[in-house]
Length: 181
Image (tube, rainbow, N blue to C red; front, side, top):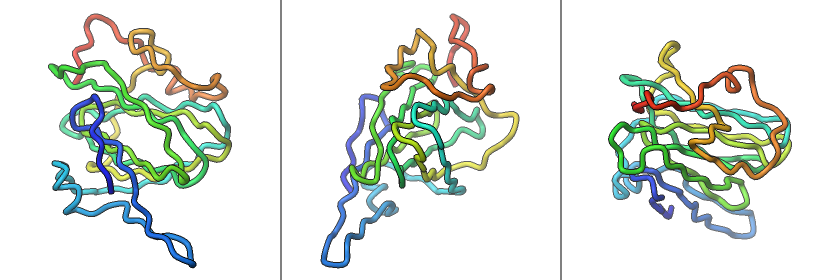
């Protein structure tokens, strides 16, 4: 795996290094030792699979509040998504800055998002599927979200919006009282 740290400290785009032969290919998607060499020491507690039916759908921007903040490792296994992480760590030099990466099986990229960041994505294809590794168990009552169209964030979504959940549409815009987590 090739680890490329983004402008957000601790947030990495990870490229798979498939080994190919006549049968096809094989690639490692996680190795504790390789992650530790990149400075990422995480224990995955939960793995989830999401499916998004319609191109243009936005999911996010979600996060878990302390003490249940979580790291995520996200990989697209079908279709393609525009994946976004927003730094909401209180006191971070990149507070409210965001980074985006296209994830697809063809480009072999993953994104590692450390605790203290909001996450969301837009499906670039119909029937996009993601596998998420989480470092913490989901805790109802500790979830939070930012509005994906918040002008203060200025996320440049590549496609017109087709679907967004009522929950995600109801996330507040950031105001002067928002200090992050």
